[in-house]
Length: 183
Image (cartoon, rainbow, N blue to C red; front, side, top):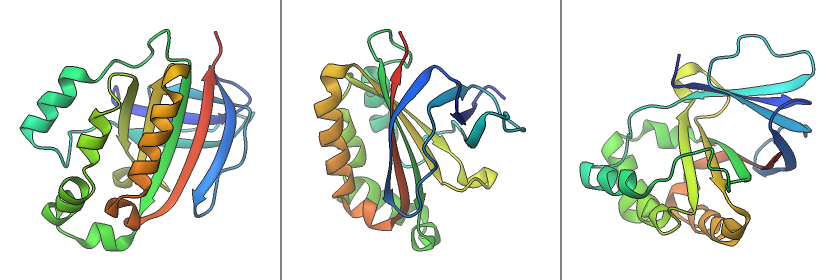
């Protein structure tokens, strides 16, 4: 499946783990490296401790104008200068999922300004959102960010803004995994 991704935490992979921080809820075990595979992994490699899986899907909370703007400025992943990455698995509360989609969108965009805030940091910070809830993973979303070292401060500002938003009141588990690509 082309739109499926697995993040395998262990001793192998292109990305060296700099830090694993449990922001909310239970963290993940610290590993040395993460291997990113564009496929579903059905068996955990012997030298690995965990795997997280998700799939890319349609944009669920944005409207056409927002999608057009995002597509115009969103950089591609795997740029040579983007040697830093952050993987953020997130699980939202049952209260979030019990709301109709239009109410979630109102919190996401009208109150939290999720897309508008993210646009301020493009094209320096590239991202890919993966969905996990529908495949019964322990998280609802995996967000993968890539950027060059000079965009670290901007990325950190973006995280602070997102975590201070109304939307984050519904986050019950969040982990921040900082990575560096071997050159």
